[in-house]
Length: 515
Image (cartoon, rainbow, N blue to C red):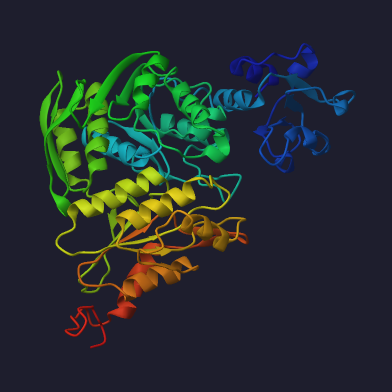
């Protein structure tokens, strides 16, 4: 693409030198190591490195244009075109959007943001759109899907868990979806993506707010900054669907540019309300959705209070988008679960306990998970929790999660969870600072060993919760990223401990596969 065309489409200052402006750009990158002759290099100030420090390397590799926030000595006499802008992150998103021909034009974009529930709400909404035969795409934590095809994400950082892809991938995905005739794209939208301006050139048909609890404070620095990042989305949306049961919604209303719709699973006077709620334990939840648009009896086989809120927001958005009631009802009835979200593991051997995997990795999510399990347990069933906290992340939540674990679980195995560059034992020490040491707990450094021990030591009726990793199929430690599938570990552990199925040990009431 001609440089002057690219700059014009991206809203950047076009180079005044006509000859230079007419040069062709063959690619865009923020990685100086990936520069090829004719490439545009965009200098990004990151948390670990500043792209401005690598301009000389980019020029040596043949960069034809460099986008910067400030002047650098190497600019003079280099022969390349230098383009100044106030914010190269904003510019990068606009450049990739222009490079792929403004792919979102003509599609409806729906953003889902909040601390917890983004994946569930997004997955449920996609299921409703699918049931209505509306061509749609999904960009999210678990996977990115164009209609029925999974799209791979090629992250620059292989250790990154990229809920909202970087601009190089995001706008390419949108282009693929546009080419495939997608009409609606449902997009999980993180505070990181908003703060880093990944969505700079996009506007949204609708934006959904689930909730706000302390998270990512290592990145944002304060809850105020965290809130402001989330709030910026609603200045770009024609419709805001807010959870009135979360106190932050009251302030968020002031940031909404478009029409506001409120939902509530409680007693609030709102646009969409859940009435006549029936919590059915492990069999899920049912309720009547009441609004001026419709009165529908809905049910979901997914258990928990959070399912009430998630299904309500997804259904409200679907109705606002014109999805038929039949498609909403049928999709919720048949959606048995969301990967890594209160997902029951099929253990492939006859045992008298159950294992669930959940992504709960914040204090609020862990508390909701444990309260959900306590809500559907029967009699003297124990709640057994296996969890840890991530390294190089907000340390303040560790003792809080320890306190919640010891208060709401009957047995806790504290272990590792993506320790990254930190020592796992140091993370566990932080967790233990908040725990009631008088409650039953054990520290097992290896997460695989902790899962195996919880299953081997299970008692009849136990509800075992593996919290924190959810859909992830890897473990990150100081040596890098390694395959780690805790679903497979749980299945193998159950088969090893109970090869002939579950039998009751009459002497101690515990299960034993070797009697």
